[in-house]
Length: 487
Image (cartoon, rainbow, N blue to C red; front, side, top):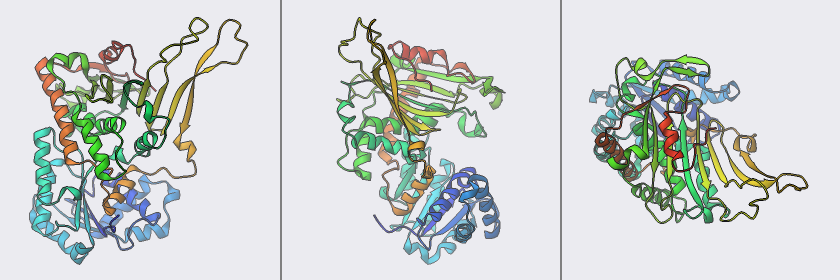
């Protein structure tokens, strides 16, 4: 591992993500002694603030977003002393001179830039940094998704960033990859002999990936409309989860090996066409309903104008390779669903022959559920015999072997996903970040769905807020003899 960089600059430093996640995460790393001793943290945004006003704002964010017991006076004092601020209007190239002046000779000890900004600003930021000499071998750049809005625009963004930063110095952020349970997918598969021999089409009937949200637009009106659930959630979070579930065994656990195997999966996704669009996908848009017993408005009511943008999508995907031949991967995500949860279900095939047939109830196939949020853990359903003399037949019952990571590691603080990602950025480890060819492979598949929807005239079906989406979603999976696993 290379020596950690000693400067980080956060663009969009006064925004919600920076205040809610990035600064609390950096504080926690500092509290654990994981930041370089001389690390400087510079905020950059359009807001006209001096250093003192910025420090006051970050202090408030720490109080608002961290448990009181984590706020120690000595750590706070040390952390806040690291902070500085520059007013940077990205449209004004001269504002980048402030950053160059603040960083000064520290550039030689490494500078990491974190872009917590809209993607439309990525290229201007890179151009501004390049103009003041803040690109080169001792710099890195991290960018929040989305990277473009289709294949063409993603290539344009990647090309603009590559003008100032080589691929090994570009860190494309998908915060799901920083979650403990997401990383545990690799350990579960490749660190346990129990699962990997069965992790294929011969033993697995189908896979479900669900990312459910209870929120609606929540202040994202200008961004979300015209983008929709397919591009906002499936293209990044859900396809990253799919790739980790479906990838082949990497030669070793490093950035190149892991990401090579993920991109192979994404390139193997079967494109959708107009003939399969209606049977293999569902678009939905929420109408007025209730969440947790409280009434909520419909999407078009929040938006204030008619729209066909989908707030829900369900897709049946296929990976055309040897391991997963004809195994459906059901992806489902939506807003204003009954509860917030993310999970992966691996549905195994039934035993080829039941010796208990005629002596008791049928055997249920095994299923592995990997819970990502809000509670992290996993459970494996197995068949067992109920206690008794069995005079009327063998009494069988499905039992869950449940492992709660929250309970199993109760003495350890559950880290914010961004803590790991920020530390990896400073230390130069790209394993948990997304490579350019991954982005482009994902957009290639997503574009095929958008094109298929357009060609087939697929419209968003209404669903009531607080439900699990349009009934067509249930119909899509039930036609195959399965059903959605609703927590």
